[in-house]
Image 1 (tube, rainbow, N blue to C red):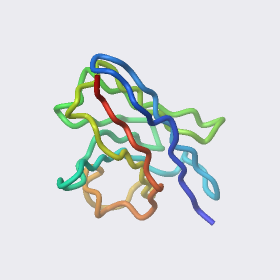
Image 2 (image 1 turned 90 degrees about the vertical axis):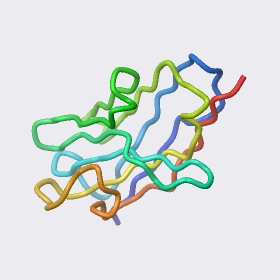
Image 3 (image 1 turned 45 degrees about the vertical axis):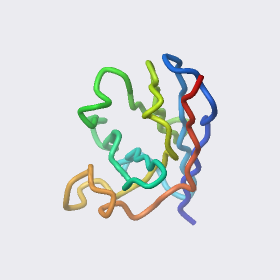
Image 4 (image 1 turned 135 degrees about the vertical axis):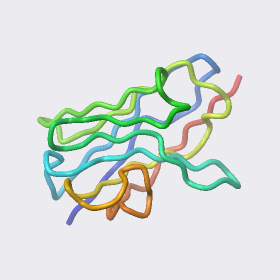
Length: 126
């Protein structure tokens, strides 16, 4: 059974940092693109970042460039999202999602991902 599990969310003050983890089971990340998305209350789910299984190319939403970094540890079958300089508007549930490498369509579109984790809450507040 293919499964993604997020962890690492929590409460952090503005300007602080968090590292989210997305651990896969039932499949090997080498052959999948993993994306991070987030959804704030009353808002649509939005793309944060993605990393491809083959070659490890990374992609970011413009508003996250320079603050967020996506990376992968194949030995641990885990993808990370390092978030720095957090702002209150970064508050949301963060989800990781997977799609087979080479699948058609954009890596930044949630509808193109077949596998989803349960999400982890990130709250940025003083």
